[in-house]
Length: 478
Image 1 (cartoon, rainbow, N blue to C red):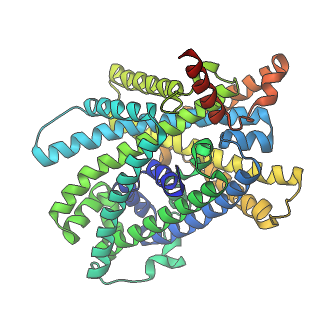
Image 2 (cartoon, helix red, strand yellow):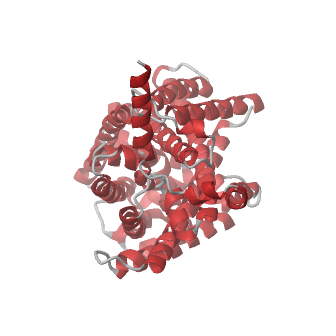
Image 3 (cartoon, rainbow, N blue to C red):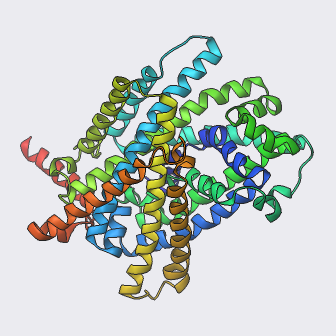
């Protein structure tokens, strides 16, 4: 993949169309018009994270992403703990995505043709498509995701331009970008929601061994993803606020779920509203493809380091894909969907909970990566081509902000996963248990299998090596 393919692949993870239509209104619920400034601030915070993250990719050129960076910066024990936490977090996001895809497709069908279908039927359809693409070469997924992203951005921009061109309900104003508007709402809740909207861009380094010129591609794609999604969300939030004018906060509190659909039907026409409803589902499907690919590569890297069974580090001789790891993720996803059906779980509640679990886990991991960057450069010294801002200041600030965000999320868990305050306290213990189990496994390796322990987080160019080895073996067998 090149820069554009990688950037659009990780952007698809965030499902920007679904975010603008379904989640951005909840940020407005928390902060009213000031949500626009909150998204600007969030973009700046995540750019600080990106500075440390990208600097690490240049000096720790490994495909393990969070797993590799945290192992290098904080040690192999917390590194493997972080890897287990990442797997659990992304599995939760994958499950939530399948449920949301089923709900959104069935809702669209009812709205458009009046036929009632079950959410799980469409979840299984999505599962088949995602599992098949995950098995094949990553470039095919990248092409599908690129097309999907272009359509999503086009639809959102049609809405934005239509609102701004018309002047909105009460005329355009700079008030949404003023500090006074921002502080009128719940600042902590707003920033928490805003950061969760960006989840997905942080996976660029995970595809290192499938990139053209990774040392150039990863920084460009990571910065590009943060800037593009930040601009898109900020502009879309401003357009949505302008579409309702002075009434926006009251409308958001009364019916956030239909805010965007109602606004786009007014400013861009009913046909565009119907198109939007269909492409929200496509946005979620694209997100599922991206999450599945991210998870497959986490499992692959862990298997290559022998933290998981070695079988899952095998590479398909033709597609050059981590097909065994992909099949494992597909099986786990199908098992979890079946478990939801068997227990008659509430689909809407399950989706919100799963998305919250995954999002909170990723925020914790991002904070750990920032600490890892500071620790790694403090221990190894500052390279001549770098400076204090890249190695200490930017990652240090992002580490503090992301840590406070994670703590706020844990304290106000009901805002992240739903339910009443204290009802789902087990979520925190689930994430903590994943980290502790991974750390204990690493400690076991250190005591009983030191050769494995030494190689944790050290999987460098293994994808290419295994692919070439498999190809040579096939040639010899022929």
